[in-house]
Image 1 (tube, rainbow, N blue to C red):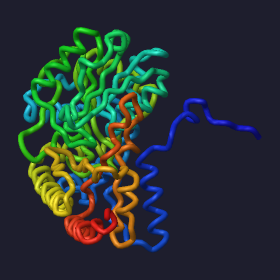
Image 2: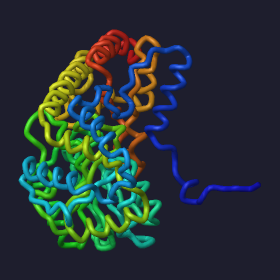
Image 3: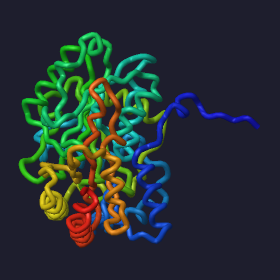
Length: 395
């Protein structure tokens, strides 16, 4: 029976992080003790306050049936309260907030609500793959802006051709940024909102890492504009809830309304008992600070190992990633392969795996991404191995 996949699916390359998982599995099958910095899945347990709330809610909703597509009133109210307290942004819980199954499904599906075939989406390069994949499945066209060190890993919006901007429907930004760890200033957010407003472009702000910071608190795009702006949030990294699949979309009422209509036709709601666990997570900031302190410790252990052997100082201001520059003349993939030497056995993601080739080359080339997800003890072990073995491999 001749069954073939769709042309859209066939056109996709492998999902970068799935490729990382595959390589890790191969090495473990060979008996190698791997320290995995490849995929950003925290190893710390979900906080007790969240787990306790979940256990209670499972029994309370034993006969709860299907959850609300857009989120329970209690969950949306908790989001509204948290956004007001954290960013000073007042959101109507009924009209300007919609629950989501984490942020990945929301980001991937979002273009379906606004793109007609051939419409343009402007996205960062490197960037979270669903910006690209969602555009492709919605039959849109992509225009990338490169994130480069010389520009502080911020987009140069002036470099986007005006004929592209006039046809664009969505501009994706992501600060604090995955993978670079860069943080955007208020001036940048104002500039981006103004740029999009003048051209009728939706400013879509992926804010999944706003709570993973080491200095000044990062901002939300919604602090600087509401009309035409939408923010995507998740509790995955803030509260170690990757497996819970819970987040939200918030902002411009018209945009959120369209997303709600899309969501009710595409997927389902996050289970109500998980939403109640999320309410508990949003009510507590102590565990978030504890996680920040933990990631700072991991960050510093790894950065000190890299700098001790002469690698560039690449200490991130936020996120749980290090966007480490590799030595001059060494390819990202080759550097990542060196780290897989059995005497090091560290997994990192080559920067060009999560970036696209462009007219000026691949902006991820020359970098590798380390996700600070192993325990502190394993980070120390990795740092010792890197400092002890890598210099000899680099020659």
